[in-house]
Length: 272
Image (cartoon, rainbow, N blue to C red):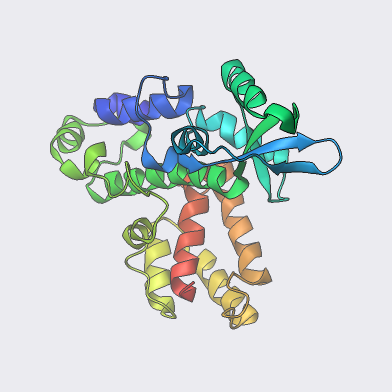
């Protein structure tokens, strides 16, 4: 927000404000904030059971949900739920609760709840983080560096005139941001199995020669990860070390951006 304010990028500031404060009821939301939910009823003997609505229009009302909460609230919701997976509960208005209770008729007055898979909420948070990372990398590639958080007149002109830095021109920002195209944009320099390309990529992002040498060693120790489909123990430990550097400021990239950059670059190298 500070960078966007200093550069006068009002559209990006507006998007950030909506993500931090939440989207008003009358406004549209990006497609990555549109999720599919399921209606359940709390049965005292069997737990949550499906709650079927025969009216197709009303069924869509309850299942096609626009998530308007601030991204910070979503992150807190995920933190409280832990890594257990499963579903999260979304709120229902008092009018919706009353309509659903009344519609049960002779079936019984079972309290309704609306659930959404945890992965869909994770996808929203990831989309926001990835979009900010993509924007930051584009600023850098266009020469807008802001030494000491102070931007020159030339940098402000570049930011104002370059379409790449305007939010409407970002691939997928109002569509499916958490898609393969974004990953390709971020790590297009990294080829599967080509450590030289991975070396160049990380060195261009400020990692030291020693850091990259440690990564090479970790990759060699872990060997093939094709079956597991994720980094091995040594590479995971190396990623944790780099995240610590981002957190304490010894790596110039912020902690939030570093997580996506590291995981996506490593995934591109592995081809997973």
